Length: 159
Image (tube, rainbow, N blue to C red; front, side):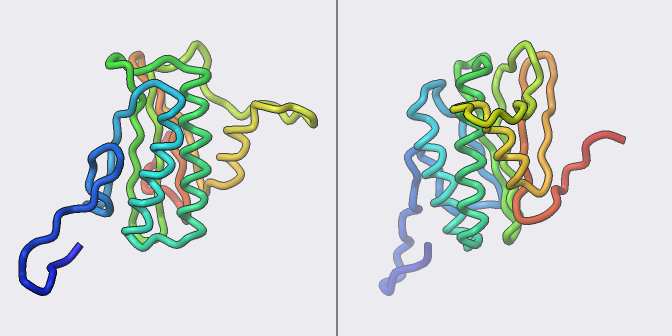
């Protein structure tokens, strides 16, 4: 994003959600409650973090984490009141925080017990193994699962 030789401003590069790639410290997407959202969000976070010059390792981790969190949300929870899922991330250097908010479920998200031949149920175990920190915040309207990659979170949960 710079200036072409003739001095005219270049148009911002937009992702498939219409947001400017690499602008500001944080990005929020409200995406439709549908499985195609997973691929679109993964692509959007990868493009945005690459534009911010985040390392390839952390970009890969962010892609995997957002894939697992959005998939879990769509499979196990209900949408927000406007029938969407909210994805938010912020980057400072190679420290990236990702959070996914939905309308919640009857139970709090937790890693499933390890089962040798299970074909599903690994999402939060994967997030737990990749993230420096992760957690869940719930209220009566939504549940947010967050993960800090590349280093500790600036968020402090609990006493």
